[in-house]
Image (cartoon, rainbow over all chains, first blue to last red; front, side):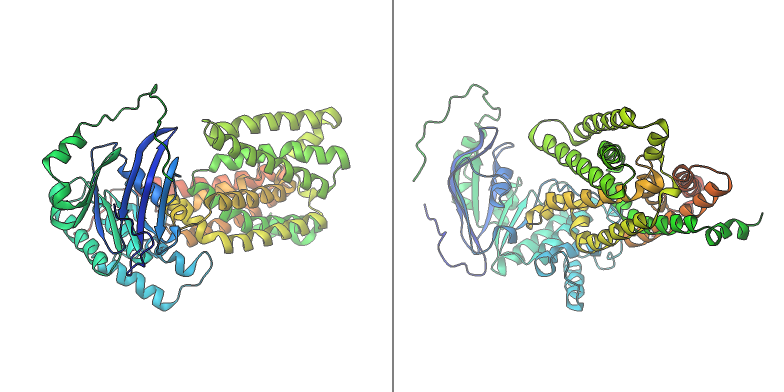
Amino acid sequence: MDFKTNAQPTGGAALAFLNATIGYDRHPALHHVSASFPAGSMTAVVGPNGAGKSTLLKAAIGHIRPIEGSVQVSGCRRTEIAYLPQLAEIDRNFPLPVFDFVAMGLWHRRGAFGGFRRDDDEDVARALAGVGLIGFEQRPLDTLSGGQLQRVLFARLALQDAPLILLDEPFTAIDDRTVGELMDIVTGWNAEGRTVVAVLHDLDQVRRNFPRTLLLARQRVAEGDTDAVLTPEHLGAARHYIEAWDEAAPYCKVEPAR
Amino acid sequence: MTFADLLSVFSDFAFMRRALAGCLVLSVAAAPIGVFLMLRRLSLTGDAMAHAILPGVAAGYLLAGLNLWAMTAGGLVAGLAIALLASAVTRLTPLREDASLATLYLVSLALGVILISARGSAVDVMHLLFGSVLAIDDTALVFIGIVASITVVAFAILWRPLVMECVDPGFLKAVGGRGAIIHVAFMLVMVLNLIAGFQALGTLLSVGLMMLPAASARFWTRRLGTMTALAMLLAVIASVIGLTASFAANLPSGPAIIVAAGGLYALSVTFGPMGGLIARFRPARHRTG
């Protein structure tokens, strides 16, 4: 196990789970998981439904506190992490144009009250151009297609200028061309030194684009180089895992790690 | 009687001038609250809160008579208590916010009516529930002015996080914005405005000056800023029409203003270009791309 939690980030921030048990209502969604995401790395998180992939990301940004163990972010504050949820609870009927929505990504620079300067406007325009949405500035959110909304969310992520980027199934229900373009953006973020963690289901895509992989099935099945992780044995082991909670499951006896 | 004659009531009678000034200031403060209540799908929350402040107002009235500050303090305490209790019940139990608010405001309203009927008369109840232009004296006008000033400043500070909290609460939470605090601040401003409005409009109808213009403005524009400004304008128009009609036909002022706002709402639903009935059923030509 290599925990590079104290290593100085090279542009990116590092994330580490130390024997973390994270769950809902005392049932663990992740059971004694240790995993590390070094600064500047690009890691895919894969596993069957209910394996705890989304829970892992939510714990990283602090939305869920671990029952046991710890989640450590080094190199940036928790609130500086850029996070793309699986089902963003966006009210698309709210009368807000795309420009204003994307500009939320500048929260850290401008906060609740700071005025927008010309370079802010230019940054927003550049972010929109980066995701191929030039000319969409004044479009209301409810006129966007699913793929266009995902591009808008990517533009906002880019504006956040975060050292650690967490993506929860960013390519679900999106056509191949859009997936390709968005994947290039993600690769570009990593090339800039940002740490990227993405929950994905398409194993071919993971093999093509992600150097590291974490395979989860409520517990860590395997972690490391993608080719060494996505082996038939490991995938078979992950597939055997049982999704349902056992209401009468005995309490875990494992001693908490010191 | 011409339109000019009707408007002359404002120059002829000091109490009408005060009522007009009060309603105009209220319109400016209440409209943005209504817009956000509508966009947050909390339209009925405003209504519930209007009921909820009644026992507080009634308690103030019983202790100190028609004293503005006593009734305001009572209303504020009751409104905040209900708002905080409702969110506490929502957060700590499986009950949703609408259900917990509904139970609390009904109890609150019942308590309020019991309090008033224990000591006062039916006239008092009517006065508190539906307001009276005659009640707007200089003290009330000053109070409305203070509340409106607080509201404008609060919105200047809250606007951006409030928009984010409405559109994408998860994002606001992730970047470290305090959604709960923003929500409570917004509710506080709303309760203040309800109390400021109750003398002119009554506790039950003061929420109308928030909701009706906001709902009407939605049919005319898709821009948040324009919508808010338009809601203010519509509230002002409804106030002028309602007060004039109230004087001319000897109607209670609060209901007259709200009915006027209802007329503007009907016009908006019919003729509004953003989803209004005519725009909807007229066969629209489409563009090529």
